[in-house]
Length: 389
Figure 1 (cartoon, helix red, strand yellow):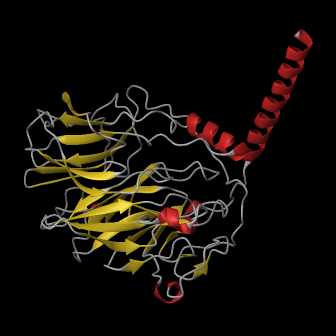
Figure 2 (figure 1 turned 135 degrees about the vertical axis):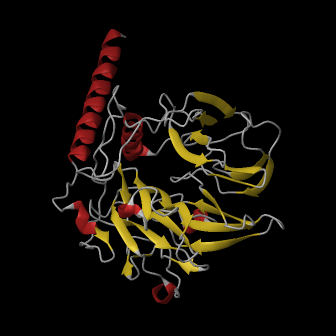
Figure 3 (figure 1 turned 90 degrees about the vertical axis):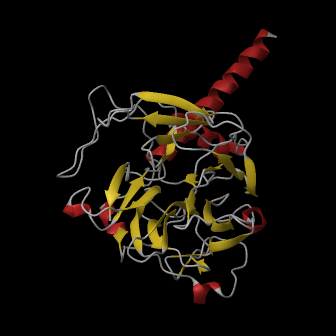
């Protein structure tokens, strides 16, 4: 019996060592020697695609900011610590009275991936904190004396939330997007509790590789826009699995009717209204596994009915031959080119246009602020910042 146990332990050790060596081989990656700025702008460099079995990997340990430390700000700006000690803060909403709502959230439970690839991916997710359970909480931060620090903190809501992300408020209603539904709560700014049962406004396809569901109200407050990312990288699970995904939806709040407003966007995220044109704009995250310098995430306008090509096409006319499902004939004619590239694998998230004239100074009076989360899919690292376009 002892001999059998010893053999089993030896084999387990060999397997574990092999997996660790394999993970180390993967992490040495396929690094880029290209300046990250080359894949930004209105005419980004689109390098030759490198089909990868595993993506270029650059993992970072989430260590936080030490006491007194702060991000480096651009000339003329300063950064102050508004609040700390939050658990996976992901999205924010500033209310008319100045209160700041923060969603503490993470991915819904994911099924374990298959085989060796699934094992390695799970280890990567755990290392960067993406495997932690979702707090499922909305926190209210209040700066009572307008000194730039939130002295008061309240748990606004924790019941009935499932990997929440997007929020919007208007006319006594707080709209919250769970990963699988859009909810509406009665809420008046100034309150410190989100009580009562919500009304479900719209079911959403749940989970997937991209589980965040951001929200944006129309300027007149009559329509709600919902960003829903894809379940996969390039539809490798079949396009039936992508029904209702990789799209922005428009929900009419009076009638409850919804329609697909924009399509072919692998993971649309931040949304805002361009103050110069009145048009909806969004950030989007593009596909992986084509090398560290493809494909650039982007910022673009979203006219009704627009098609951005995912998963078959990127950047207007580049066909991704890896996609197995047949490409619709209309795509090559109607796919739109994004307006502005933000860099490959920067994971563009939040978006806000500059409003209010000179509040941030003349250098930041007419443009867009974009949070670039950064991605483990690139080596060297790129993103992990807030940029202004």
